[in-house]
Length: 82
Image 1 (spheres, rainbow, N blue to C red):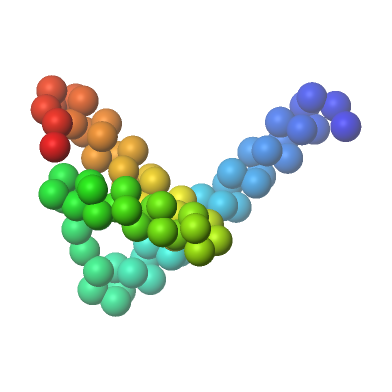
Image 2: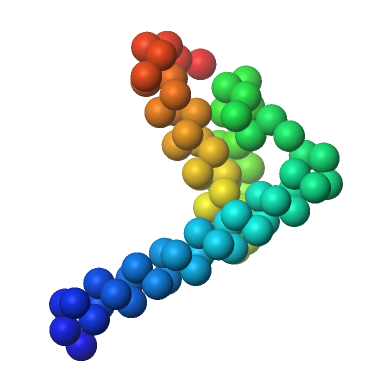
């Protein structure tokens, strides 16, 4: 497999996974789960991400990690920490 073929394959894997993550987040929003962008939830998200990894629930773990990264990036832009 060439480097370009590998690059294309990685891109497809990332794209497909991002779609699954979006679908899962949409399901949770439809269920009324909110607060993904609330900095007060950062430590809860870290605990949940760890739990989901331990359970082998990779999709939910990825979504929690995405929310953690978002909140930490927002804190850096704002020059604060939780």
